[in-house]
Amino acid sequence: MKRVRLKPDATHMKTSIFDKHRDTLEHHETMMGTARGRLAVALDLLTDSLALVGQHGVYCRSERFPGQPRMDIALVLEQLDDAKQLVQSAMEELRSPRP
Image (tube, rainbow, N blue to C red; front, top):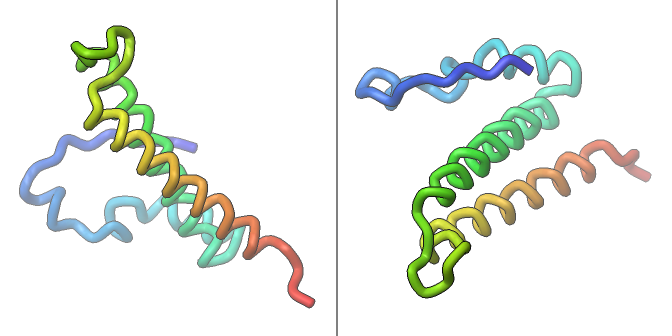
């Protein structure tokens, strides 16, 4: 999937999520249906966010626990990972046939 990195600015912050990710949403919604397509894009955004925060964690190390990211970075990573797991489970639930 083609990912575009945009610099946040005042215009970008006011843009609708559906406008910012229109091409990706259209592609995934066509392949998977509306709900699963949107969840797939959300999952990609969460994965990208995990990578960005993880990169930040490389430079922001804990003084109390050498080799570990700072506590705030670790908590953000944990929350993003939890959200990613919930999205994945929702996608699986939507994929399974209903009785």
